[in-house]
Length: 464
Image (cartoon, rainbow, N blue to C red; front, side):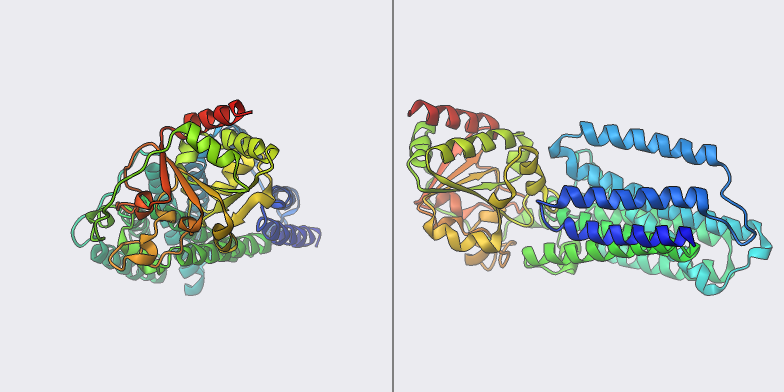
């Protein structure tokens, strides 16, 4: 009875924590609340759980050894990771969750094999197989996503890959049913191997710009697989946690797709940001690019009434979040209103820019989402785009042949002046020229974001 009460409390903390995660100002508190619920659920299970014969958990030294090792590794990994590497860490940790769900199914299947008295219904075996399939896909897919985000793996596709993937998935489902109905280990481990292979083939061809969607989708897979584990063990807190993760990941995936004005199917087969998009069916951009000096940019921003900063992945790569916060403070001391425009898919994972700027203590109320900031660009004197590309490309609204056509963008071109900081004129993930760079109101400030912003801060200070 006490254990069930602990599970109920833990489930409530998960729900509250998830609610708090919806707002940057309360996200840290929500994380701590959910972590507390998970902690009491873990220790409640260790000390209070009993099986049908009244036996408590065994092998406690191994259990606590695993807890200690996992806690130490996770703690130091999270403390040492750079914010630019946060997306790949999220993918790696999510993969570990998928691996756990996979191993639960493997252990339960072996338990049935070694204990004839533990005969299970077909429905129970199907849950085991589905948990194993989804967990395996989440594990191997997340590892590939980690490798691509960290630069260790490249986008790779071959002819008929999507057809082969669909055929492989159908084979996995058919063999999975055979494994459940016959309880034959050969079929079970064949399905396990094919599911791991499918996870690799599933993620490998997807382009870098679609990584936020892929991470959200794989996260939902892990949640669903964990929910199956909750069914297997009749564990309410595991079931609730899995459902919450699965549903939240699914909803976030839908939000990401809407932010790109694309269907999930198009994301999975469109290879946006990879080889297909780079073929360049979009119309050519003509005109000249105007470069701005640091001193001219400093004068524009110092004497502006309102400045909007648009952060992108280039800001994260350059580790320039602290410098941009310093620039914000400096401009505000001059009486300038400063805000940050946040596009839903800027960066390499959902909320990447929010997390990055939070690290430098940027006030949450200055982070304005796309729908709210777009009407304000007409009253903005200067927009400073730092390392963003496709999310500010007007081709999304003007060029039906563009691979990003229809994607909601930040309407920075409506501002009085636009300053774009980039290393070079290299295209973004979509592989197309950015029309914004050739607009009369746009000036390019070339160079590494951290150095360019540092120079900009120094120049504004020198103006007195």
